[in-house]
Amino acid sequence: MGTIGRAFYTVGFWIRETGQALDRLGSRLQGNYFFQEQLSRHRPLMNVYDKFPVVHRDAFVAPSASITGDVHVGHGSSIWYGCVLRGDVNNITIGSRTNIQDNTLVHVAKSNLSGKVLPTIIGDNVTVGHSAVLQGCTVEDEAFIGMGATLLDGVYIEKHAMVAAGALVRQNTRIPYGEVWGGNPARFLRKLTEDEMAFFAQSAINYSNLAQAHAAENEKELDATEFEKVVRKKFARGDGEHDSVPNVSDDVLLDKAPKAS
Image 1: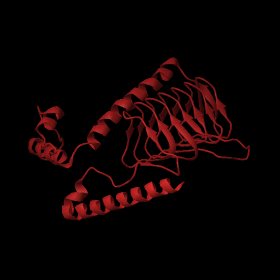
Image 2: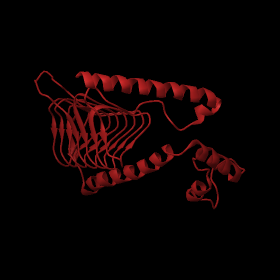
Image 3: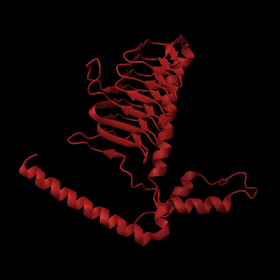
Image 4: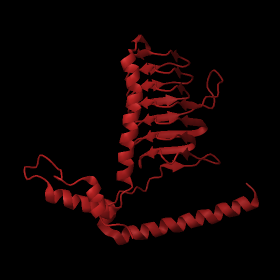
């Protein structure tokens, strides 16, 4: 980094420090209401050295997710709550309409025993279940990774293949098109049916739509959120079994909610 670069870095650092100081002051002035906000002080996106995440504007990244370094997230994809995508020593690429579900870890390999440099590449319309671990592997389009599955260095999952929940796929294993593998270590179980393979694409669509709803909720201002709570409480049924607003749609709530100045 040259002299000019260091100067810009220093100025940027102090501007950000000033902003954080103002944020802390504002939080104190808000008192208890600060804790009711839908905002998060956590940093979902963070650079490492000269590597920084590139996330499509139509993708959803949950406030508690962490995307660090050289990570590309495509159109309509979703990175859910508690996920960690760490592209520090290599790169991570995620295609379009792919969902990386809650608490999943995606990492890469700079070097390993076989001497390979391994990024992690995940294609389009892929479903990765909750709490999976993907390390330096490749997952082709419309594959399905079950909850709690682990994919180690050099694993290659072909299109329309499935890794069962809790499976451990050993290094450099290739799972062919249309097959289900499971167990520890993972082994071939059976062939997928046409209906099951068609479901993979539908699962991706379902999650893409659900992500839009979560994104809309995360973007709401505090005043609008508090207004909805008041209205829903007022119109909720007295039996306590439902928390709904009869004959009042979400669109109406949003129209009537206080607007940010």
